[in-house]
Image 1 (spheres, rainbow, N blue to C red):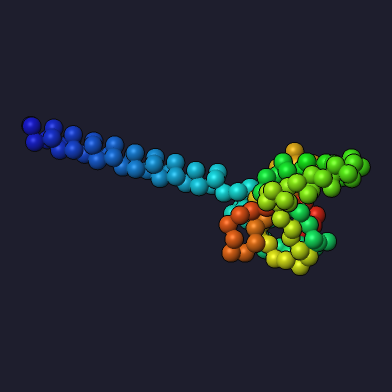
Image 2: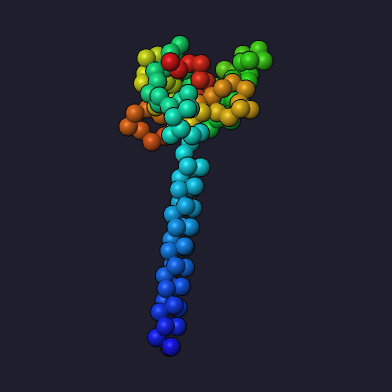
Length: 139
């Protein structure tokens, strides 16, 4: 009788271990799908083709989307003096770079639905730093 109870207890422990292993694997899979930038692994995503070329260049690319939106906002409102000053400041500080016409880039992340200027984060092939640009300047 004691042998049968011991076997049952061991079998129960094995089942519990399998359950928690499956649960851990499921948690990792869910985390993986939620952590990919803007769903670039989703085959229905229009940004699935990640290689793009800069057109209408040279263009401004900023590490922080807020810097890019601030500079664009000045020019969009017609305040070219403030726009030029802001542009000079962010480039001089090293927060933004110039991407040239015809330069190949890889899309890392696309802006969200509330993104007024429709931005995308791109990086140069082989580099790890991504820069936010206006999506209309990519083809």
